[in-house]
Image (cartoon, rainbow, N blue to C red; front, side, top):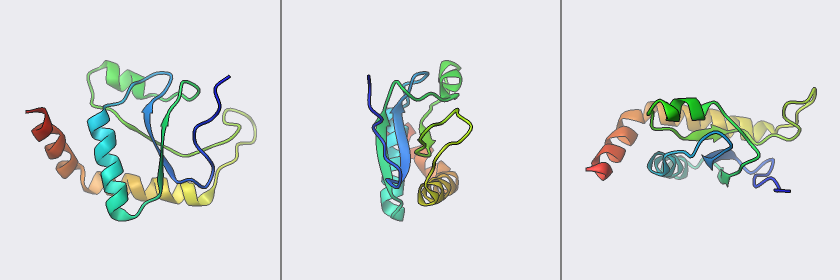
Length: 112
């Protein structure tokens, strides 16, 4: 069986692939770059164990990448997460929203 590739207290997870979606590597790279610039702790994942709703967005043609919170025992009555990971995800999502125009422009320029 496949072992989890992320660890609690390792930071926000930038997922390149999950059970429902293969994310856009350009967008994931830009998110990773932004996290590094902002000093936000991250870890990378490509796992067939986890799933998200990103697959539906990607199937509709949306450029997609996932940012996740490391979690143990998800979909059970008691899940375990690390508060620092939750804070890292919050900070990274806020940074992505704030810099969305820059990220979009960089992805578009690289596609040309």
